[in-house]
Length: 429
Image (tube, rainbow, N blue to C red; front, side, top):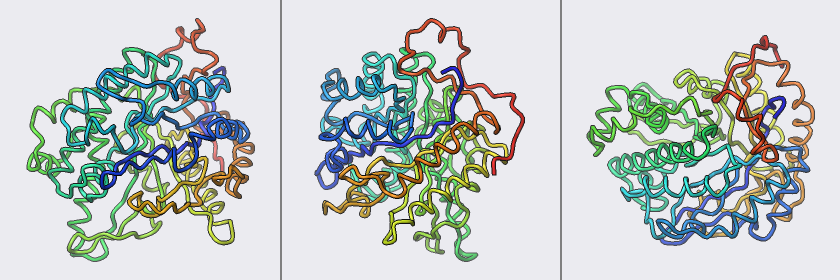
């Protein structure tokens, strides 16, 4: 790209966990298998250049060295034709039946093989989220007992988290062998736990340490002594821990942070939690994560139900955008923003545990592909801001290669990694 742009994005929801042995396939529930051409056209119509998107893992990855690429070949060819830049979401909350679940110790190496095969088949793709929301995936599958293995112990949680993060790290390494200028955007939930009284301070502090575990391991950051004991007490071996500490892939990464109104929690003295609603907000919490990892940031997910009057989602969009501007103006290199997802979702009101067919009005478009008020607002926001941010704010230059530019000789002369602009800070508010 001749001049780097702020990454305005959306996504196509492709969660696929199992619940009580039933596969939940959001691509099916939301109609994407039938309407994918329309969906991609809507992305272009919105003026969006970046799309969080991935093939259905459970349909594509049919065995250790076996793949059904038919749907991926067709859909990614269309994205390339439209010059839409995919941020490829390879594993989103579920694995194929033949893998089992996230307790399987073979999963990390098997998944790295899948990631390598995908990168070899689609060498023009540069941006990846190998495993989406690693912390949430392990928590919902192995600590809350909701998805996949449906276990509810600290030991199962640590085991799932170990395998999930190992899979993410090995997948990054495998992709880099094929595409050395690959960039990885870790879409991870940004959480905070508030103590509701003095007796709850201890449990809240423990939870606020646990929220960082997936990224600490992924980025090779040493955990504190309490978390080290927690990991060792719940089955992680010293060699497992040193596996993470021995990797150094941060220079290829952007820290994606997801924030919803449910991401902050009230903690009681007995350790029970419940939703607190927005207290600190995205600006405060994303800064906490940036100060810990010192990486460029992308706001990779947010949404809110449209509401009876149709404007709750619109107001949330502008609030989140104001938080993004605040963080940038405070010196944090925020590279992108995402309303997730393109269309409404189904049954997320029960965290996918109930098969009620309940449509959740969270999308830029409804399931009939009619634009919602938040879609109109996001389209206008992009039109208003896309030319301003690269030149008038602190920014990093992300060496993203457009699909149409893949293979051109000039890209090989570009320095690898993400480099900082020399533009002077400018208050965008």
